[in-house]
Image 1 (cartoon, one colour):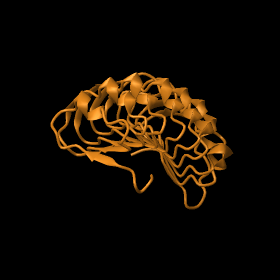
Image 2 (image 1 turned 135 degrees about the horizontal axis):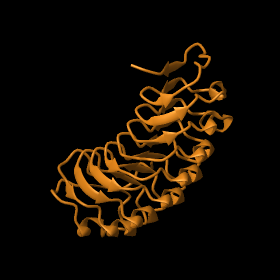
Image 3 (image 1 turned 180 degrees about the horizontal axis):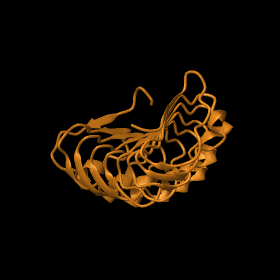
Image 4 (image 1 turned 135 degrees about the vertical axis):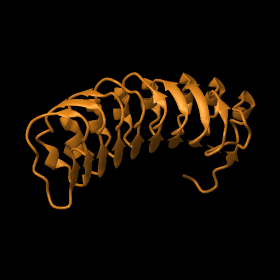
Length: 223
């Protein structure tokens, strides 16, 4: 994040269309930990210089408008701990500069877009504590910069993709998949991740035998 990036700290009660009219001057919107309510207006798509938005811990409802993904300069998106519903659009894959995407502790549903695999600069992905369904996209295996993935406490099904433990994810340190409905066995290439030290798989429907655990690794399979 550039040090001279302009920001707007909002202390108002509601999100309004006027809030998003300053597209030529605003690089960051920081209005976390307030009592802001209402929906995110489509006008947010006009912020062509927006690099950072943080509205964590507010009372925002409704869906993420498709226009949100028009902000191609976005590097950090922090929308966790609200009541945002709907789905994450496949257009998230257009945000090529994105490094952080935190939308945990909301009411998001539908499946996880496979287009996350387009995000070569993504380092932190938080989708936990939503209502996401379907399988974990194998395309996650192409997120070459990823360090932290949290998908816990959703309704995910199917097998754990072997791509999550491939050498392409050489920087992955933390992987939380617990509290879902995942089935099958732990992938046999589990030990191929050079930096993976923290893997949580508890409260799923996994079967098979225990994998070999190297010294210094932490594998959490149950309570």
